[in-house]
Image (cartoon, rainbow, N blue to C red; front, side, top):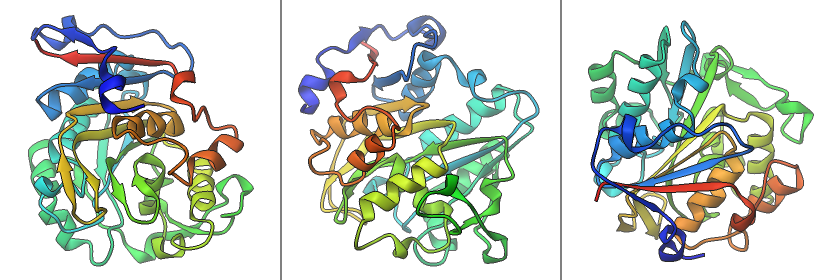
Length: 293
């Protein structure tokens, strides 16, 4: 399914307050919501609202981990990392839901200082009061991952010590897997992402997502690398956000924004075989909206 066909069914909404523009949807299976619009922050908030609101996932007094893609020290305009406007919107919604603490964290490729600064996360933390936490090797612990093939792999225990885990990847091209979205973004939880690249990368990514599923996935598809990624490449602007509690189905719908399907993405079928959701976008419960006239 190409992007044009995918968005044909979008509901055109007037530019009115979000609380009136998109009403929360009652839980009905693994719902995936997409919202298209000009403002990354506005469409992020609208998409979560349409899924039922952040209060559906975050309770008062909870500690929440927000995990964007901060793999590379790139300016947000390059679209190699999650848009800071999206991350800021997520943090604000989590705080409004009553969270006691919000942590932003990733394990970048190479030293963390460059990506954290270059990707705009220091500004997000300063504006919201969220903790921008570096990955510390001394905090790596062995994790069972539901007894799958990754049993015993080491994970940053920061991700184990929170009440809610929100995955906030960017949709972009990747030379090893065609696309990196939510499932592959989880490689930032573990000690050595390079161990994934090579043989059976799709199976390993599926096992990672099966063994450590986020509570909520918010895919930044506002400005993305459509080819040539993951560090840089051809940039386009679908101006879309995809949200779901189901990581596989969020990824499948996000992939459709760029006209990709299970045929080119090696971790979709292994995840489907583990019962993690549908890989045929036509079988997924999708509600699509367009914010603004």
